[in-house]
Image 1 (tube, rainbow, N blue to C red):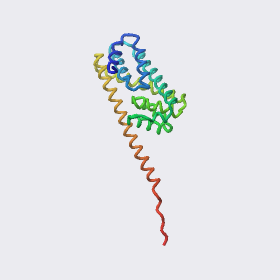
Image 2 (image 1 turned 30 degrees about the vertical axis):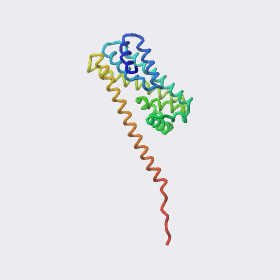
Image 3 (image 1 turned 45 degrees about the vertical axis):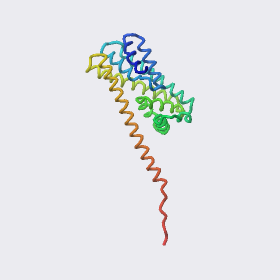
Image 4 (image 1 turned 90 degrees about the horizontal axis):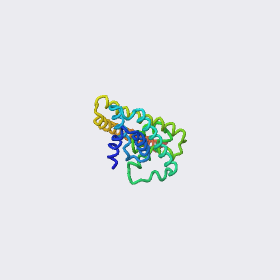
Length: 219
């Protein structure tokens, strides 16, 4: 059913309801990653860029507001549930995402929230962990607002770039979706590689600090 959402939203492109639907998708995606908000956003933006409907500024605004609101809901869920229950999952990827977010939240919350917005599972892990670790909500909201606007702008930018080359709305929408998906996968891979290297360095430092000092033997 989820793979039918994007064509449904594209069909609504000429209707004012498209802003409401797009906002709702981006909101729900903030705490339920299977909802394809990126795909719907770039598809609608590509149609808007090539046909003039809907208004592109409205598309960007609806997506940004929905993303920020969805991130705040994820923050509230994390604050209510707490860290202990967040780490419980049968899926290793989800457990790893929460563990990484918890380790980094206190040291680099701003960069974590900004980058996490571009990774579906990562954004949920980061934002719920921000709530669970009691990161001040004002700070979270400020960073989340920047992240939401940046994410929406990037997605619209991808659609505009595709529309400049491909003047057919449907083709531009499809190409934009592929590019957006590729960007998300690339960011996900880079974050994973950096996390592994950081953990490896931390393990080496820990091993060296625990190594026993040589004992001098007197003659």
